[in-house]
Amino acid sequence: MATMNVIQPNKYSAVVLGGTFDRLHPGHHVLLKAAAELARERVVVGISTGQMLSNKEYAHLIQPLDVRRQAVEVFIKPELKVQTEPITDPYGPSIVDPELEAIVVSKETIKGGESVNKKRAERGLSQLQVEVVDLLFEDGNTEKISSAILREREVKQTKVG
View 1 (tube, rainbow, N blue to C red):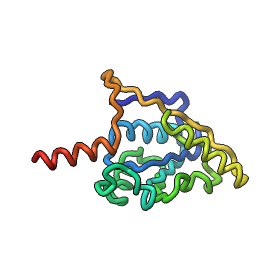
View 2: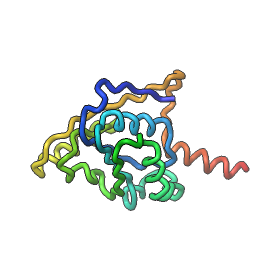
View 3: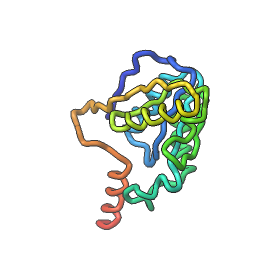
View 4: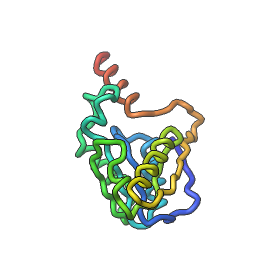
């Protein structure tokens, strides 16, 4: 199970993060939990769709957008407003919403957070605080879990069964 520590809960009014969020797994849980803990009022979650999915491994097995949106909305704490947005580019609402204050990223996606801030600057919007969540595993397992790995396992199980 992945864990994270948020130093200052409720630090930002609105927080954004993005991803495919296919087959919610512990890595997703950590990122979503961090966003929910950091936000006082609103979490904006960009969920990849369309062309953003075309280069993903086993893209044909990615859950429908509605299923992924519902999984994200159910996971985040109920006292927050959760805004899920389909995104067809790497930025989605992160470069147009002036009320956002922070973006939650993993170590693997820091460059994406920096790119968001560059686009926001070009548009005259304030810079987002980039909150990096380290995906540490309590059980000592260092294997990276990903939706692609879960889809691959599904394919292999189907072939065996």
